[in-house]
Image (cartoon, rainbow, N blue to C red; front, side, top):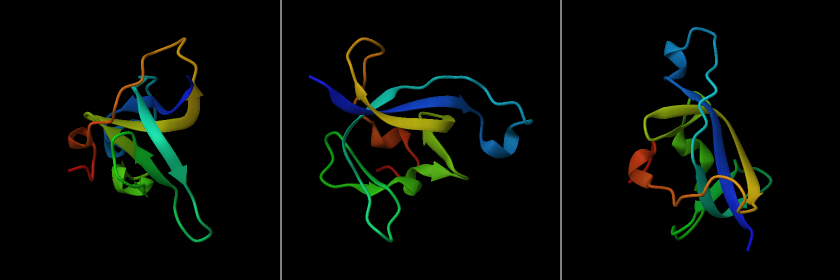
Length: 99
């Protein structure tokens, strides 16, 4: 069964501490139930186990997605084929704006 994941890449320190060199630290692939978008809205993401989609930018700082102490500059929503890294359920306590 294919599942939607949010794969995090290009992680590193807080954007203000970076010296113009991007790291290539790959992060986890987080399980996602849905990604929603309306005409005047920012993208909203519903991570697996959550009740409803929330605005993606509440989990970001200066355009970087924060998870477990790392700021990721790139992320992609994709179908997980089960051949590569094992996706995990997002832990909101490791996210900016999390509970």
